[in-house]
Length: 77
Image (tube, rainbow, N blue to C red; front, side, top):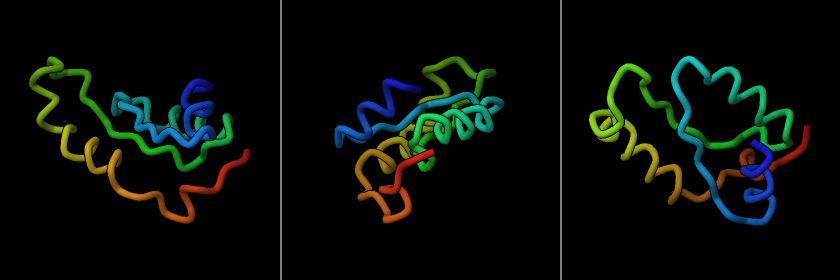
């Protein structure tokens, strides 16, 4: 997570692909590292990567290309 915080604070947009069961940990860690509104998409541990890509590629591309909201631009712990 610290590497994502460095990228985000440098103005480089990031989107984390996490596993569904780790979403609460991702939210906690994002808050801990000062990027509380980090964008992320969920992947399914039960599906092989190539099969799961169809599920998250649309949300991933949207998260990478949609402008940040005022709330997402705020940082801090």
